[in-house]
Image (cartoon, rainbow, N blue to C red):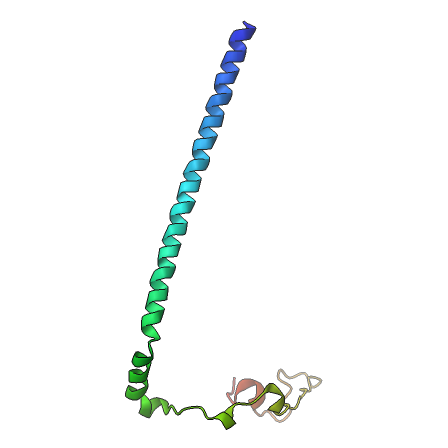
Length: 118
């Protein structure tokens, strides 16, 4: 009886282990397929990017939209370091009067709203 019980439990353990291994193999195959799909998608996007950024294509677009974009080449004197830029003055709004935005005269704060009345 003991020998039969050991054989049944060994068979059950083998079945459970085999079933678990097959489930993990199935998950692994699904992940490999998803990885292949993503790699193919990346390849397609890279090819699309290389087509869209071809210098000849960009030059044609720049010529077609020259009047609207008014593109001109960048000159060396236009490039500046961060240290060359002027410091922006810091303005602290007065919130003590209870009005949102702190504008005592009811005007528009062009610094934070871009001149748009909200």
